[in-house]
Length: 292
Image 1 (cartoon, one colour):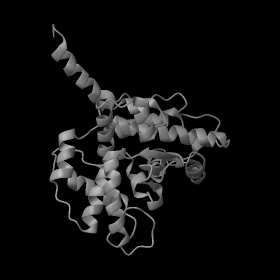
Image 2 (tube, helix red, strand yellow; image 1 turned 120 degrees about the vertical axis):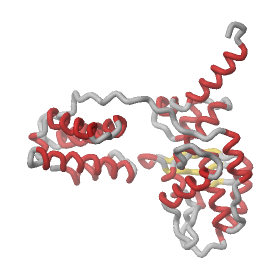
Image 3 (tube, helix red, strand yellow; image 1 turned 120 degrees about the horizontal axis):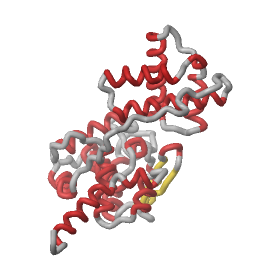
Image 4 (cartoon, one colour; image 1 turned 90 degrees about the vertical axis):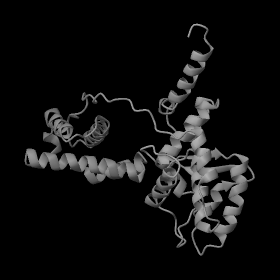
């Protein structure tokens, strides 16, 4: 069937992240189960575009969003392309398959006054956990890095002399992100209190047991802290990434520079953050134009 080889291909050749591979695996397994239930078996060389369309219809009836369905279509397209390369099939049934039209969603972000409120009004203790929690939030907002990148930072990845941090992004691509001076100044006391923790690991952020923080832990932390200053529906580390990008562009940052800091592969991925910049321009235009 080629599934195990496919997952290895994603990991070692495509260098996808663990979360991406997990999503691909789940999508593929859902399609396999659908085929087994509806046609009795899953044999790649017997799968046609008709079977894929039947699955898409079934997903739509289950109120799966077009965005999620399109991701599943991508999974199948990549899978069948891979096994065609192995000569398991002669034709990719998704070669000419179209993606569903989906509503363009603007990224959620926190406005600047609310971010200031987060750091000035939320009470963080002066014990290790409180200092750590505030540092995590500050680093997200200062760099726009991904959750997976933050939890894997090691102490030696910081260069306080050059005010920068090295992160390992998608497909194991390293990049250097600049830090503003004041966050560098706050990292020094954090590193001092971190040294007092009983830990044998080099990771920058630790649990109270001295182990590397994990994704659910950081997600809950961000969600809890943002809930103290905003009622917006989405409150996640990725919202802080959107917030960083939006605020940078609103304050005059170059789009290409923001792209490099975020670690985007293409400029189109960064352009979604220009939405708020355009709204700011529109308001200035309405205020300034004599006939508006």
